Length: 521
Ligand code: NG6
Ligand code: CA
Image: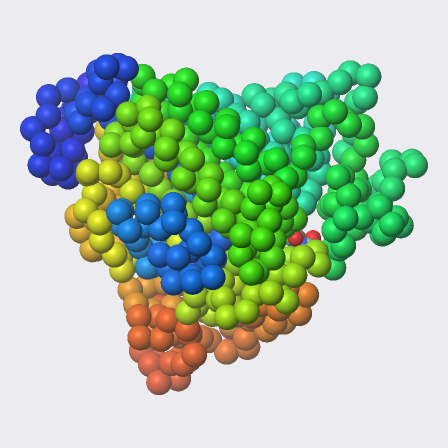
């Protein structure tokens, strides 16, 4: 305890120049605003929001005043990374502090996949719970549930509540995957024993319409994939039967998650809390509530970003009204980069106009190029962090060790490192080396440089129209001078290439063998 308190005192004193006395056990309601208490921590994680989709990062056609407020009044990182260019591995990396490429099951999961995180594994919510936090997750999970066969009508476990979250209100996988129901603390909300839910990713249930066979029932048309069970006129990935009363209304999802996030905060305002608020936008299917339809000239993709921005604003307002804003550290980020056509005809491509969802970066979701894993990354802590733009390299992987440091917890061995000083804007010395993932392939960012090893596979994914980064040559880019990765310097810089290959080999270690067949050297 003594040690814990001295670490905390050091951290907060250095950070804010305050003389502090004690930190633990004084987070009472009267002291919700007490500058000496542990901050609440909120991670707002968007789904497929691109580096260029936010006003503060350069977007002009999508008004995002609330996201911009966080970015402009906090620290806007220009070199912030998820651990992967797709969702499941990205979230695995953030919540466990372990590189997703170490876990060969960390791939985009179906809605029936078992829980990906071992219940014995160290996680960010477990660490914060140890520090006395009340922990909750609201929104997209996509890390698997159960341990094989899930009975969707009974207690669904293990899940978020078994890996460190005291409370959970989630969708199992993605908005485009069945089951299309909310699950609260392991139980489907609105379940009805008389209308049991069945889910399969192999076979349809007799008599159930599908997107493939019943186009007349669709309000949104599928472009690729997404032609199985139809829910609310939207064809999905996977088959589902039953649970009529429990099925979510897509257009209400943002409001539903917002109100759960707000009630979590209100309920736990007198204790330190950690909320992982995992919004679903702008992932497909893009279904803005009618009050946001037409907010942009970009159709549903732009409109759902405005809708998400509204949720951010309403959530901040709740923190303000509860007197919690100055005692809450907020991370605003995204699980991976952007995509326009991700499987439905929704005008995203047709109406994008001049907007660049990936900003100046190359590639997008699924890609080894920068727009795959480099995402909006903002740290906001009112009155505690100086507004600034930081070019330091930061990664969601390091939130676990950094928040452990902030709360005086020691951690077991992991890839996560303590970069609290960088995250709070006191240092510009970010991560020197990061091995990031895209579709089970990896690349190295070191300093200003990115090295992508040669990989087999299409250079362009034609369905989504995104450059994947596969090439039969090594690629080496100076991303400080050439953020758009246009000049491959592998031949001009043989020594640097060799050094980075060596470091990459050392960092990948044995795990590298798993993907060896994909690499040409
Ligand atoms: C892909 C889906 C895509 C999206 C993605 C997961 C098809 C053809 N494409 O397999 O629409 O659901 O998985 O996105 O089915 S993520 O953000 O959760 O990683
Ligand atoms: Ca995603």
